Image 1 (cartoon, rainbow, N blue to C red):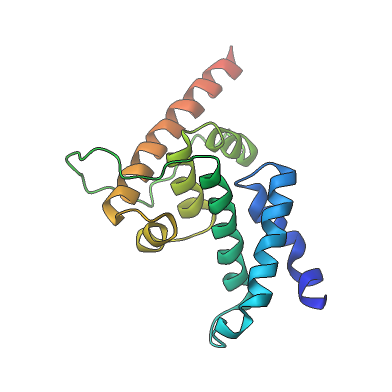
Image 2: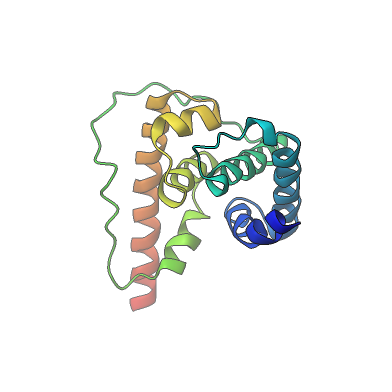
Length: 161
């Protein structure tokens, strides 16, 4: 119970990034259950919180997949080298507005943007989590970032008028 009490609020917050409250609570609890049942796989040189967070995120993604979310590779396109670190937005836009805009992205872009931007996973980790190619992760991140910018521009222009 000590471990659950220590991590439950943080893991619920993580789960809420992907699912509505009730589903997030269920995913968080399933994640804890999986962690406790597989505690022998925890590597002592890793951070327990990071290990648990990954389990909870995977549980959220599993629930999304149950809803028929398809994370299959998108059509092949000419790929460009993209600066993944270029996440600058108008300084008058709040963090909450950015999070709300992320929630409006197409689901396949939303997942990659959340895993990359909010959780800090790199493209190889995202490809493993979602079962997609690394280049698909990069493409979906780029497209998600472009959609996000457009949503924020639209929101900012509407707010000014």
